[in-house]
Length: 133
Figure 1 (cartoon, rainbow, N blue to C red):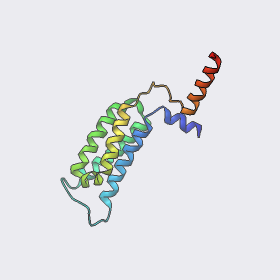
Figure 2: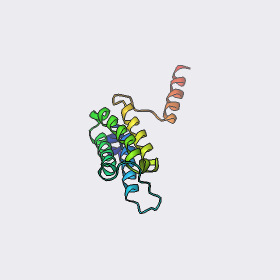
Figure 3: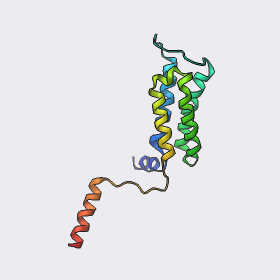
Figure 4: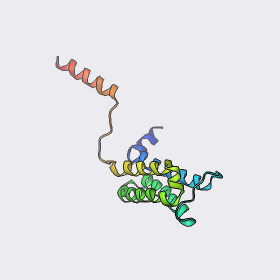
């Protein structure tokens, strides 16, 4: 478990995961046997290509975080493109997950110090106060 936590800490994990889940959700709504499925915009290849590329960009963000800026920009453009090609972006859910994931990946800073839990920072403050006074 510790190895996974360390691996996850060195990449924009939440952003990549949301982008993968958004693309997957859009692909699933394209295949869903629902009578409510909307067929707006281009049919055929583009409806499946854009969410598939979203999944690919999310995986590349996870496994190649050094190129996260390019993949996240591509991911946001693909997410917004699904509005026209894939059931209004997977009934808006997949579109939002892809857009939020892309922005999280874009904003991730690799050299930032890991956050300390509030309980640990409170203990450090108490310890520091005891040393001073």
